[in-house]
Length: 114
Image (tube, rainbow, N blue to C red; front, side):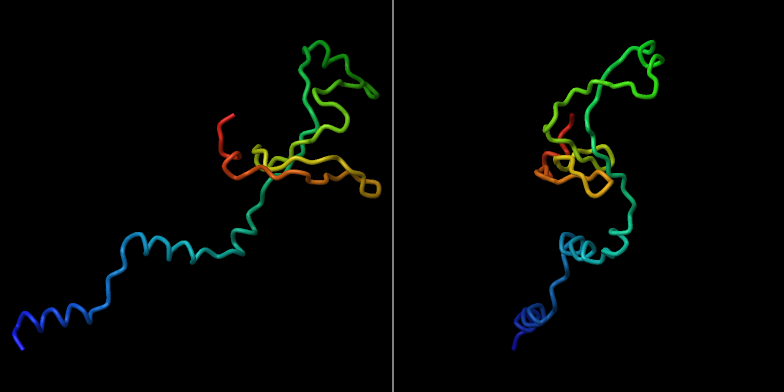
């Protein structure tokens, strides 16, 4: 066998070196899911908003009613860290309030600027 043929055979027997992309992908699979699931988040439900003047705010007392920008039966926004992730309706669960999720916002819609 010639020297060039021998080098060609050795090259075929050597394992391929991982590319940078493959190395990056393998690093992603090493993420500990329990650590991710333990990260605290703030979930809030926005019932509605209103704008008032400071003098009107100072006149509020117990029993005052504020008109919000949403009507009865309109979907409420479910937010995580101030990003809308879902919409739902307010429900009564015993003596507490809850939300029934009616729509999940698509992941690409969550990252669009306001």
